[in-house]
Image (cartoon, rainbow, N blue to C red; front, side):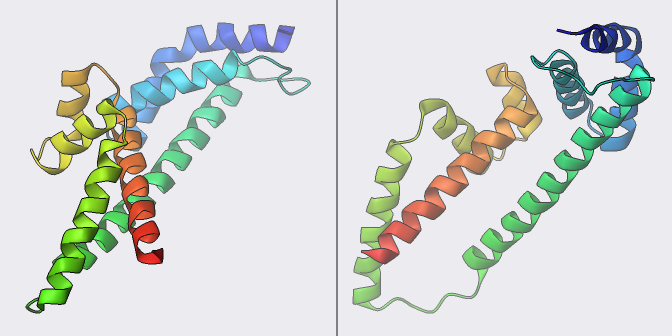
Length: 172
């Protein structure tokens, strides 16, 4: 690690609380702010060479944190849009099923249950707690001893996995 990386680590140690406060104000979520503060630390400690000459390590760290926050907010916006699409697809008016449609739906449900069974147990548990028990990401994270970002990532992975399973089923 070069002198610049060492300077970043020292600057991080000196400005950690200010970075976290900035992220809390920006994100309105202390848990996510803590996660991104830690991610800033990881970037400051990364292996490899930091940019050649960092004249202001504090500003550089705040820029890293701001970029992480922007990426996080974009991701959350996209997830919110996807949730809206899923809700829309699931909540549209439903016509009565014909016997053939009922059998197809039963077969698809069987296919999706198999897909859920292939998930990691932690992903299944987080998905169940979120979708069927109505628990918040914060509650789930506290119960399982993980971050809210980890909970959100597991939910995203499960939804992606189920979407792929539905596409696979439709392709059969």
